[in-house]
Length: 90
Image (tube, one colour):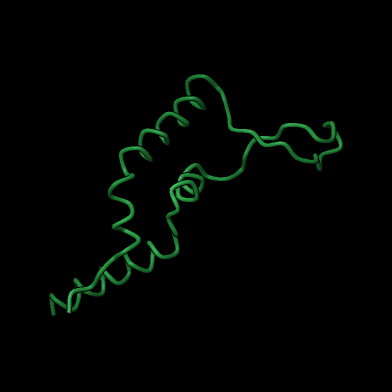
């Protein structure tokens, strides 16, 4: 029986878009010193409440969320792929 990898199949049609967005956000941060921010209540005594704060979420996680990719399922599928390859080679 051939294993299927549905979460990986979702990656193929969006991979170019995701890559371009990721590279653009990296370029903004590296070249332009522009970071993604979010509004929230400040926990630091030196800033004003309800101010903008840098987003601490990894761009990869944000892209996965945006495109509806479950990274836990991706990892499970990768482990299944490795297991299948190992079994085929024994």
